[in-house]
Image 1 (tube, helix red, strand yellow):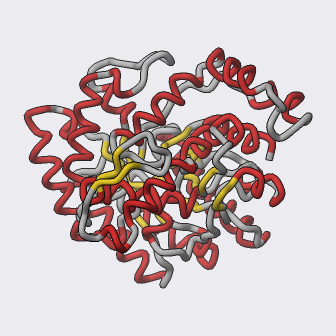
Image 2 (spheres, rainbow, N blue to C red):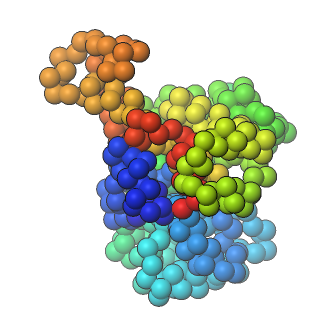
Image 3 (tube, rainbow, N blue to C red):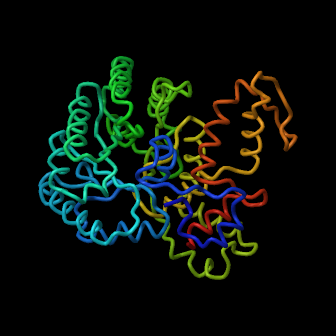
Length: 387
């Protein structure tokens, strides 16, 4: 699979200076963590889940979480587990290329139980999402994952969700973060990414942000994000990929754009019309939050609606200017440091302070590609919607 792999090679060639690389569930963890992109959640109760997964893969989705936790009623868990076993068997029998698939569980015991019940179709599973993760609650989940991986002989990743009240509350935050850091470091080879559960943070104070506000406008939430990145997202080799919080609003329906998109993959001068339509349909807040996610050290995003996937991926593509700066900074002859004017002559590139940014940018360029110099967000979004 690859990002923007659902659009034609000719359109990809017109968009990208460097095309996104191909990867698979067997790729190195470093590649997969960077490539998660918009991770789309779906309740595990959906009766045609296998069809949904394949349809979404055809629309550019590369990672999904099939949820047995908060998205379904307590009374539905047993039926949802049985449904997952059936749907994975169906997907395995079809043999199609799939997104990276993860199951969000409630209890540690579900992990080895589901892996055993999945049988041979477990090869279609990339791992598990672990809810309300702390040191105390997280260790049993990670031990269960290790047990299931050993029993099945199949590599399984964990994506802990950081959403517990102990992490939110100021008096317990430092101790909780320290415990989480110690735990995930011990199981580093199994932890693909850490996910932020901002909805649970807001719930603890009876808050809900409007579509005009990002997570960073809610000061309690912004403070936690900053502390999580401070402890767990460092660029010195000790950190992990930390993903952006969910955006809850989805009034935009892609069919609104279909008549326009059929005319041309680039809408031929109608970029401002598309931009206005996006703003009018509550995606302006999402676009701002995606930009703030990256500015604050987060990568990828939890999504609960397919209409969120194209904007997340379009804004993940590295611009030609970013790529030029990053390449200049990491050139071997720059190893001693120094300062230079950028090739675009609009900024200072300082080799040592900017090196970690450059390395992260080049990894993103590998998995999301580099846009041609004249190609911007609107063209990438339009192509993603029309693929």
